[in-house]
Amino acid sequence: MDGHEVDIRMEALLKVFKEETREIVALKEFSLDVGDGEFVCLLGPSGCGKTTVLRIVAGLETKSGGRVTVSGVEVEGAGSNRGVVFQEFALFPWRTVRKNIEFGLEVKKIPPHEREAVSSTFIDLVNLEGFENAHPHQLSGGMKQRVGIARALANDPAVLLMDEPFGALDAQTRNLMQKELLRIWSATRKTILFVTHSVDEAVFLADRIVVMTARPGKVKRIIPVALPRPRERTSSEFISIRGEVLEELDAEFAKTMMREMTDASVQHKA
Image: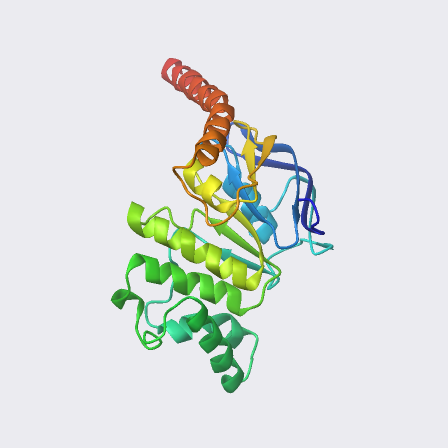
């Protein structure tokens, strides 16, 4: 994060989920700084705590220990300085594109003419001109996710938190949406923390890739991606970084599989 002021700071995060008969340590000593205007991707095996990190930063999940600040202010719950985009489109089916985008502004009691001006700005930004009055069932998957991104940005958050936002899309639409997101990010320069399972997606999007360990999740390695944008997925440099990330992940995937086999064996004996 050279040249960036810290926008998100996570210090020694601990998260323990309590079940009836046991406790599961999801995160332990997870520490990470994300710079202002930086695009950072979290990668790791299933169950390593990627989404938990995002939800804690969003204020949607309580931490068991550690500290999180956004723009220097400690996170103590959800707030308008953080916009969240989930894999599920989470749009209100009875509201039009414009009214979905304006929802947060309505909650803030922003006057109607100001809401319309803001929503028009972001409808233009995400290339949905002509669909202002369409309802979600009339939109493609990619268009629905554009509405979700516009809705998050309409509140002018300091950071954008994205949890597998393109995971439900087909490969072609996903690639298109990755390019669209980079265009939007370039225009807004928002700080983005992005969870993905796709190494290719992370190398295509990120300034830095944070590889997490198997549970309990912590930072294993941070890999900078110093390739100019737009990035060519077939270039030798792209393939080299992709291989480097995969090498780091392989050991963590193996640990996850071993733990799952052990847990299954214990449950079978019980």
